[in-house]
Amino acid sequence: MPRLVILESPFKGLETLVEGDVKNNIEYSRKCMRDCFLRGEFPFASHLLYTQEGILNDDIPKERALGIEAGLAWAKFAEATVVYIDLGISKGMKQGIARAKQEGRPVEYRILDD
Image: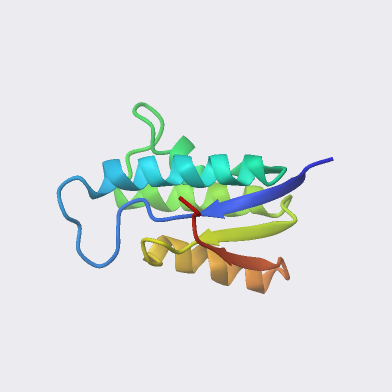
């Protein structure tokens, strides 16, 4: 059975949000997901699912927090948290890393091999 992993990659960006960051980060996250699949893993990336139009609005703090908590709840089923660091580590990623460590889930840091 493939390993279940939680994928951490930037969504909003780092400290400053530049026009186009979210679009670029979504594209990057999709590449990270593909990388996981090619490694024989089944990834889950809540920031790609819950932020889609009509689900949760990431610009509303209460809805953003709800999406983060939902993703962290699913993380309990994962065998590891994989963190893709090519674009840096965002605040949301730091939360995911901290929760993984708190729950005793291994954290692996990765870069994409283009």
